[in-house]
Image (tube, rainbow, N blue to C red; front, side, top):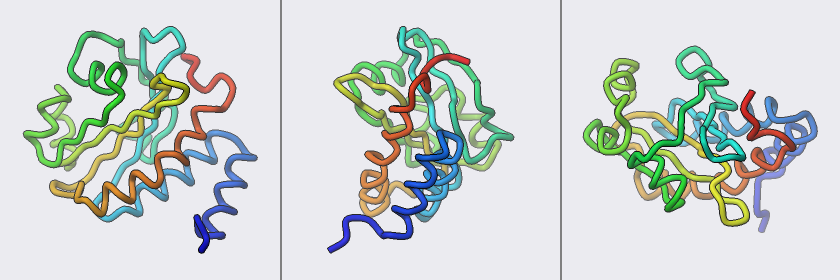
Length: 165
């Protein structure tokens, strides 16, 4: 038994050696290989926990790196950052339950969204946000995503990665 495909392991090792940008590219390819997932975005929590900011994405046109959002008392922030649990909207109504910007996502053709907290040493260091088609978050897709999340956590171990730029 091989815990991870050797070719994927080699790509991840090379990306880790190169730095966060290369790792975002490899992780984006892995997450968007899950059927129905079209965009993967990586969000860091600033060390002082006052803001989150995009640090990587497979779609820099619509989700530019560097975007900063304040950490306020919202359902999304409470669920992801404080409860350390994922948010999964498998259709437009599900997205709207946690993400006020649902109209913008729908206009871009996304009808499902999920955000998975990356918890390291008991705190949410970041988030993997995935966008795609309604109904995409099936049990098999969620299992594939769950298998990738520990690998994505490596991103948030780079020195200074969570510092606001």
